[in-house]
Length: 320
Image (tube, rainbow, N blue to C red):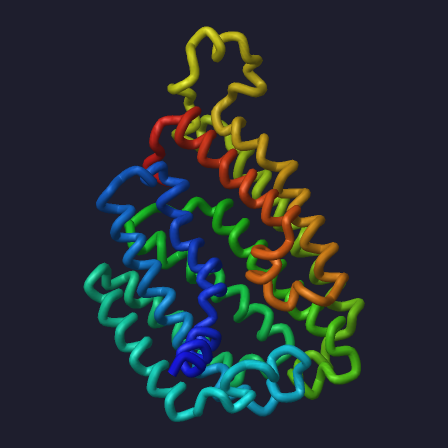
């Protein structure tokens, strides 16, 4: 029983739930992190999303069982190795999907449809889209975007268009990095594991990475550059007035405090690129986030700076 429970847990991939934390983005950037009702709502939404994501992994591993067996790492997965039977895996996935949908429907109908869209997209990806070059990367990126949108729908927030561009850029960057790392890791066996890998050349994926890496930090920079007319928050309130009066307007200007996070974002992008070309870990972004200290440290610093700017230097925002 213990070995079966471990097999079920490994297939559920709780480490992947780190990506589901993006559902809190709307709560954080609208300044509502301390709103108890909205926080509880988002937390329950996180649970529903995690149930659904884990259920999709059960389904994905069932359909990918043959290709996983020729992968140096994925062949150890419980379903591919035979430690978890396919009928039990499908039954558990059905329970998770039904539970996630019922829970999400009680929270918000728009949130339910966001999760339903994510599920349908992942099923189509598993059955068909992952075999189509370029579209496979776009679908992976769309999954990240839907996580953020789920949180936006859940609390009925406004999604700033530049923030949306940043989310899209990061998603494409991580998806292209995943494919590039797979190609570097599998070499000649790449097409045996995933057909589309044989259609990507290293130079093409390098171009994608360069394009999306630039878009990632630049879109975040643009999000922090908005003028007074475009932003209705970032007016300092918690810092002592005498300190504020001593700061130059170029620094104190509306929206400018978040600029201090740009160097951290640039470092994070550069570090992830370094890991991608190492080829041994970037195949799973969540593993990188939990194992690479420089990258993890940059994300923590970025998060703390964002919280400091929004919750200590600015009033609560009505939207982002």
